[in-house]
Length: 134
Image 1 (spheres, rainbow, N blue to C red):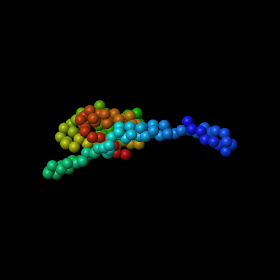
Image 2 (cartoon, rainbow, N blue to C red; image 1 turned 45 degrees about the vertical axis):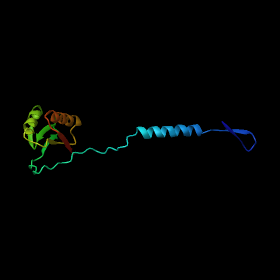
Image 3 (cartoon, rainbow, N blue to C red; image 1 turned 90 degrees about the horizontal axis):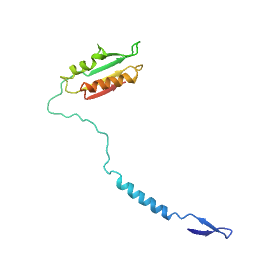
Image 4 (cartoon, one colour; image 1 turned 30 degrees about the vertical axis):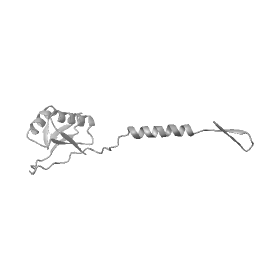
């Protein structure tokens, strides 16, 4: 603890910050050690070319349209589908497809609950990747 004389000649207390600086430097060294040095970016799937051109497969789009009743109407590439048959239809479609990509397009009025159910059904039907179309 150090004291300094003020203008009036009386001793005034000053804070000694030397121990605080030591603690700060120790914490700085600890955080530098535990922080990983290799930065991780975004993981992406880059298409690989194997010498053959990929077949031109039309993308599969699952569309959810809001109906007057609570549940939305489903259609795969503009063909109506009943929600109970969705998984079997997707299994049938993706037997022969190699890309495993499904696009889901929902109307703005459709609750996200139904979109999430469609995504879950697609994953259960062995769809590898699901993309959302606004």
